[in-house]
Length: 202
Image (tube, rainbow, N blue to C red; front, top):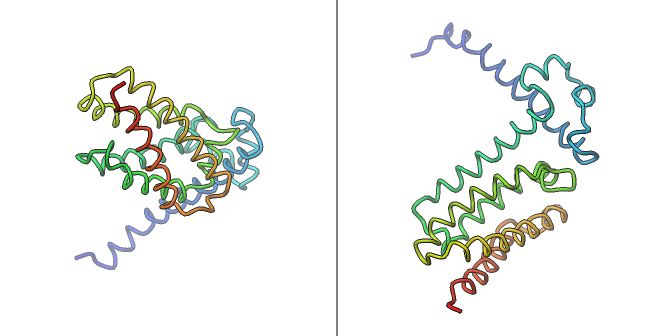
């Protein structure tokens, strides 16, 4: 059983962790605000530090530069997407897309401001490509089990991915006024229409 003395010894570490999280959250919020106005390559550490009232030395405790910071933020979001997909491992994602899509849209909504800049005019296309690659591989495995035509899959996925990204961007541009579940249902319907067409024998 933890004594009062033990509790007191643990507290400073927890406070330090909270301070780190708070500082990173401030920096992330500041970077998002700046990316609404300019490309990431035009943002300086001094500019970001001044905006959120954080010492530049503090910034360098966590990140090498602005690009390293953006990579870290993207990786954190990317990890959540990976966990989401992994949670549905064993399900047939090609025919049971709705549960995955619902969770995905809710994740985007929870990170609305970040996703708005990542998928906006000043966003990072590398993040979108990396995200697309993970989803593509999840679908590819099942596609090849159903129909061994990888060329058809590549074209079908490329066409569908562009449409889905366009739909997601439009939703974000509209400030996510529609419910996440409704957007998932709409996306699921469109994916099923495209899939049915692709699976038909010419």
